[in-house]
Amino acid sequence: MPASTTIEVVGVKQTINSLRKIDPQLQKDFKADATAIAQPAINAGKKVYQTVPISNFANDWNNKTATGSRRIKGFSVDKAQSGVKMRFDTRRNAVGVILIEQKDQAAAIFEQAGRKNSGGRLDNSLRIAGYPVSAGRTRLIGPAVYKARRGIEAEMTKMIAKTMRVVQAGL
Image (cartoon, rainbow, N blue to C red; front, top):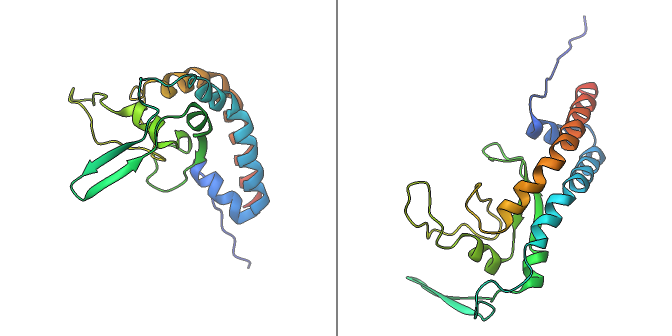
């Protein structure tokens, strides 16, 4: 009597991770399709950076800490626009799966520095350059991406459902 097992994929993270096990090309195709669908939100995030937001913000500055000082490059519109990236995060403890982030350090600092946290206190613990930010915590990129997000959710949901069916059939 042959043994059989059934593996059920529950969510998006598991689907993306299962694609690699079935066929690595499926995972590459999924990521390419998702990036193409999310392109309007990425473009909206890039469009908000048109000018240097604060006078003298384009100059380099030193970030003095207890362990020394670190030079931070000044704000550049070109670098801020090219710093808007999409990333897949399928780690077990990840909050989101598909993230649109600001990778440019000066733009990320401008987005979050001095913003109030949920307790009403100023949040000076910057999470910059590669770390996701929560809704309502950014000045420019958050509102632009959330506005464009609504237009891509239906297409992304259809693509994820189709991919889940492929994964279920492949397992």
